[in-house]
Amino acid sequence: MPSSWLRPRRKWAVVRLIGLLLLGLIAAFVFWTHSQVERSSPSHGKSLDSGVAVRLAALHDRPIATEIPSVSSMGCDDATDVKPIDSDPTSKAVQDSVDKVLSKLSARLLAGSDPTDQVLGVYLQMMSARYHAFADFSASRPDCLRDVECEVEETRVVDRAVSPIVDEIAKIASTSDQPEVYALAMGACGLSWQSSQGNRCSQLSLRQWARLEPDNLVPWMFLAEEASQRQDSAARDDALFHASQAKTSDPHWSTFAKVAESSEVQAQPLEVQVAIYEGFRPIAHMGVPSYNVLRPFCAYELPFYMNRRQLCSDLATIMTDHAYEVDSFIFGEGIGELVGWAPSRLQALRDRKDAFLELSDEIRSIPTNKCEGLNQRRAAVEQELRYGEVVALRHRLAESKRDEATLAERYRNKQATSRASTRAGSPVTSSGSEKRN
Image (tube, rainbow, N blue to C red):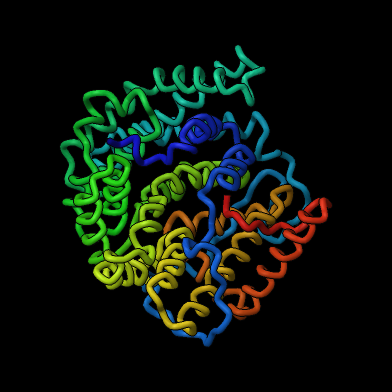
C-alpha cells in the first residue's frame, strides 16, 4: 500500500508540515531538521575504535557541477554583497511569489507531452492546494498547534482538498513506464491517506516500480518494509535478496531539481529561489526507505545468521558504495559491523559518515539574512537535489580541501560536548546533533 512509504510515527507530522511548504524557508527547513529519521547506526551502540583509511572511490562517479552561478536579488548585487537583504525569505511577499511562480511553472509543464513534466505539473498543483487548504484551516483554528485531535482533523481536511489531484497523479503514473513518474506518484499517494485508499492509488504498487527498475535498491527496500509490516517473511526475504543485487540507489530527487532549475524559478529573486529549493528538500527526503527492516534481519541470531550474512554484507556494500542519502550510508556502516567487516574498513566508513554529518551541520548553520549566505544555501540544496545528498557532500568536502578524519573528529567532539551539557542540565550550544532529525 502506498501509505507504507511513510513511517507511522511520522505521518501526521509530515502531512501537516508539508502544508507549510509555501509558507517559506523556515517552515520547510524546520521540517527537514526535525522530522528526519534518527541518524544512528543499527549496530546497537557498539563503538568502533580502530581504523585505517580505506578508499571508497566507487562512491558515485556522476559528474558534479563545479560552480554555481550567483543570482542578483533584492538587496543583493552579487555573491560578495553581504549586506542584509531587503526582503525576508519568510515574508508574505516571498511566499506569494513562490505560489505564483510554481503555478506558472505548473501550467507550462502540464501543456507538454512528457509524462515526467505532466506529473510534476500536477504535483505542483497538489502542493499549492495543500498549502491553501492548510492556510485556510489554520486561519479558522489558530489554536490547533500541539492539539493532536485538531491536527488529525486538519490532516483530513487537507487530504480531502488534494485527493482529486493525487488521483490525477496516480492516473498518469498507472500508464507510464518511467520510474521517476512512478516514484513521484507513489510519494504523492503516501502523503495523502484518503487518496491512498482510493481507486487510482490502489492501482499502483511498489512491485511495479521494482519491475520498472529492478537494479534500484529503493523500491526493493520499500517492498521489504511493506512485507515486514504484514509479517510476510518470505516476501521480505525475497525483496531483500533483490535489494542485495541492486546496482544503484536512486529515490529520484533529481526530478525535483528539474523544477528548481527551471527558467521560471531561476528568474526569481534569490530569496524566492532559496524558499523554493528548501521547500522541495523535505519532500525529497520522504522518498527514502527507513531501512529499519534490516535491524532484525541482519542481527546475529542463529540459525538464520550464517545464511543471511553474505546477503547482508552485499546490502551494506551497496548502501555505502552507492549511497544516495546519508541514512543509507549510516545504516550500511552499521550492517557492515553486524556482519563482521574489518575494523579498518568500518573506521573509514565511520570517519566519512561523521564528516558528512559535520558538513551537514555547517550547511544548516549558514545564515540566510545576507546575500552570501543565501547563495551558499541555494548552491548546497541545488546540488543535493540534483545529485543526491552523499554526492553533494562529497563535492563539498573536496571543495573545502579538508581532511575527512579531522572533520569527523570535530563532529564527535561536538557530540561529546552536547552530551556532557545535557547531563549537566545546561543549555546545549553546539549546532551539531546526535540525531539527523
